[in-house]
Image 1 (cartoon, rainbow, N blue to C red):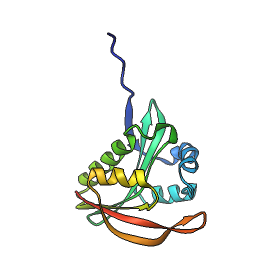
Image 2 (cartoon, helix red, strand yellow; image 1 turned 60 degrees about the vertical axis):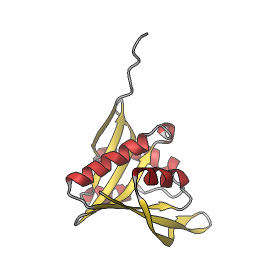
Image 3 (spheres, one colour; image 1 turned 30 degrees about the vertical axis):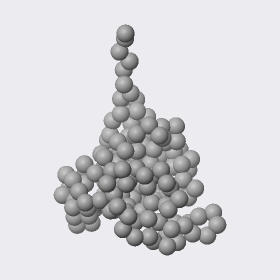
Length: 153
């Protein structure tokens, strides 16, 4: 029996040079994607921004803002071709680890109420629903609620 090598995944900080690759992913996984400007502004604001690589290709990314001892997860995304393989969890655990090194006591995020798979991931990690933000997200027909979730870390 021969050993089959496992795919190699790596994390590294996001840079402005990554935005072309990110903008190839973002519109394919969100109905209302972030703009290039949203990502550039986050980088300029020195938010914690990371990419997940598979064989040097960006396949995921996450951005987090620190406010005192609170980590706010702003975006967590996995390329459509790599979804449903546990990579969202891998990236989320990486961001929680980063928050811990920055002495965060809690992590917060908003998620579309319709994003059942993301909600299940967050709950599986230990996030709890804290509130509903009515009409938080743009939608094709009006607005969509967000679920505010939190995790004590």
